[in-house]
Amino acid sequence: MSAMRREELVDTDCGIAQALGVVGDWQTLLIVREAAAGVTRFEAFTRELGLSRRALAERLGGLVEHGVLVKVPYSDRPPRYDYRLTARGEGLLPVLLALQEWGTRHVLGDGSLTGGLGEAELHRVRGLAGTRVPDVGLEAHDGTEVRLVDPEAWTVLFFFPGAYAPGSAGYPPRWGEVPGTGGCTLECVTYGRRHAALVGAGARVLGVSTQHPEQLAAFAAHAELPYRLASDQDGLASSALRLPVFRAGGSDRLKRVTLLVDPEGVVRHLQAPVTDPAQSVDDALDVVRRLATTT
Image (cartoon, rainbow, N blue to C red):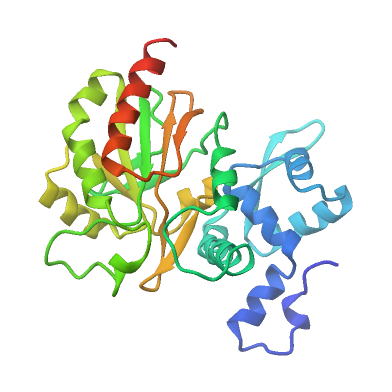
């Protein structure tokens, strides 16, 4: 069944109803999910989602009509198009993260709040090995844009729940009671201490959380970090990589995962779960030294 048209909805003043008029079924939302992960072409959507060509064409057309996707031609004869997320489409990404968190916690899980990885999340994260990281740009703590992939170096890409400068209004109430949240400061600081060795081995370090850039800037200054932290406050990276999240303090927080990405953007190694944040840094350094010198 195709998505409802906005004019067919009775509740014209309700934002939820109007949003459902655009993405009115689960298949349409999964198209947005795949677009966020870097899928752009018709055949690739068909392969990933298993939809019939007719159903896929109908839903892609609806998303283009509503400005969620834009068609970008890549072939004239025959006419072929990439379907890319627009700024309006990217506005749906926090919705996808909220659905993912709710489904993982309340449908796949027992409802408990945790920053640790469940079995379904571990399976999904480990499936990133050997895949290509989408070309996503985030705002770094110093105000610059930073990409997840560096074509000139390996990237130790670590995702963490959140770290705050002392005295800042940052940590949510009862943050320390949520399993898996402890160790962010230790992890970030340890990467700072090992930064020179990692650079010498051919890697850059990039830490990512869903905190605002100014919060990351305050922490980076406090901890005197020699590398950049990036803000995924809009869910671009977490949606693209389908990373596990949990909700605390009214915001989606990234669970701790580390990816080692080569200059081509391929995930060559990953750490999940990360149960010892400090040791994980030394482990990442060992892997960088081994892989970067053998390729």
